Image (cartoon, rainbow, N blue to C red; front, side, top):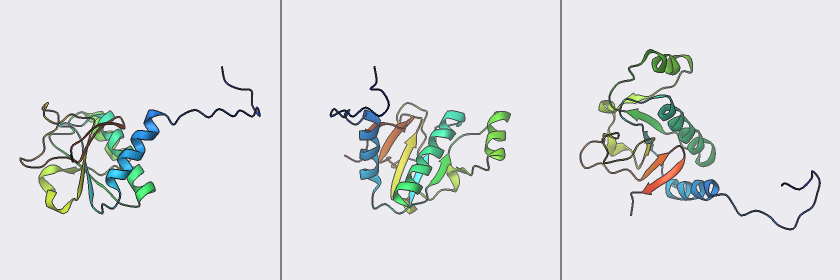
Length: 139
C-alpha cells in the first residue's frame, strides 16, 4: 500500500482536504488581531477541545491570542474538572464585548440550530466543527 521506507517516488499525494481547509481558515483569519472563539451552548469536552485546538492554531500560526467564550453552563462535574485541571479559561458570553473582536469563530456548533447562541446581530466569520470548515459566514 505505501512505498517501503527510503523508497523514492515521483508521485506526491495531493494535499488532504484538512490541509486545504486549514489554509482557507488561516487566510480568513490572517490580519485579524482580536479573535473570539465561541463554543456551543452548554459546552462539552469535544467543544472545549475544538476551541482549544483553534486557539492553539491561531496562536502558533498567526501569533494572535483568541478569547474562548460560551453560553449556558458548564454543568457536568467532569466538564468543570476538565477546565480546572487543565487550567482552561473560557469566559461566559455575557462578559464579552463582541464589538472588541474582529474575527468570530464558532466551534462544534451550527448557527441557526439552537446550539450556538450569539447575541442578535452578531454573525460569525467562520463555523468549524472538529476543525472542518462548515461555512464562511463572511460572504
